[in-house]
Image (cartoon, rainbow, N blue to C red; front, side, top):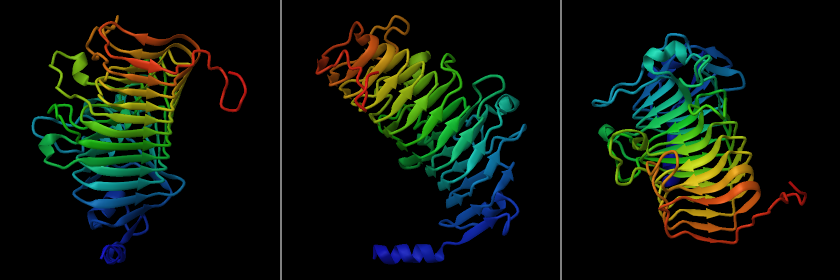
Length: 377
């Protein structure tokens, strides 16, 4: 039965070509039925595209570029009292898309679009997406670093949508304010996940490791899933997983973040490699942190930090508690398990801040300066 359904689906799906069949991508979207594919020829397209309540595939070729404009509009509809900030080149509302082999160019027009809150390459509102082998560049201001992101997601409770799934695989991100801004629901304090992420094998290059407005991946409340096999370099925060209420007067939610698994990622020359605040039960396994001010900072309960390697850093692992800068706003780690982590030329390999409780640590290698190829660091 499943095979018959798959054959029927593929037989009924149409392929629409831009510009051969339709002069614009938006015209093809209007004509497409759910399940159809839109193939976009090489060329530069300066239009904003809105997809609503359809399941569509967007497939480019080398040289397919969707480029920002100086005066973009806010294409996504408001949700209750929450008005989405930012203008998407490809905006997806209550729908599902696959996006493959397309270059998104923000052209550093974040400041020119400040009236709509900046610019976004792929903006996903209550929508699932699979983004593969795409490129995102220039989603920022000029000269400011802030003002844009390559991919931005949100799945607010007020949409009435189920959990959405976001997959980003084999993409490159460079010269952006934020590469990926991944959110479930920041406003409803949802105790359960609203967005499931699978972020694999991407290359993210930041602009300025000293600029706090330049995170690589930002993960906000009601998100769970995994981040695996990515290279994240030259960003202020390689990954910033944060309860946003920690910085505001609003009270924190009882479970502001859900567990995320970080596996086999490489962080190089970042201000801070990975900060995970209050994401209880998260796992950090086989990651490598080189030349960051702080490699990994965590404040979850029951986090597992296993077989990671840290080199040429001021601090390797920081278990957050009563922090000299943030106090307890970022949470207090408890019952963390540290196994088999290696350190080479790290001034403070493991920092346990006041109020942290229940840490179990063994097998640490404090002079682990032999690289994977058998040489020395």
